[in-house]
Length: 111
Image 1 (cartoon, rainbow, N blue to C red):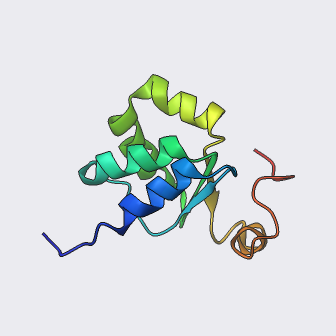
Image 2 (cartoon, one colour; image 1 turned 180 degrees about the vertical axis):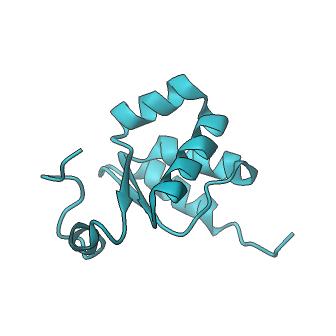
């Protein structure tokens, strides 16, 4: 509808074919059910997932959307098996900066 491209198909293919663990950082995406097929394929293909939030309200919205997509038990599996985490961009600014600069991903970050 909005002339979005399908580049994500090549990203997912590269991730699935990679011998390395691929970590995903999500920032500025609603994680709405309308993108369920893409989000599910992407989330299930990566090693770890970090979702950056502006505040607690946004985090609760993301959690709600993901539970609608995956169901409660599969969402819990993502939290455990994919180390799915949420981080407040402002409260954890220095950690977010380190992650985005590639200095670390989850090593040493408290849960």
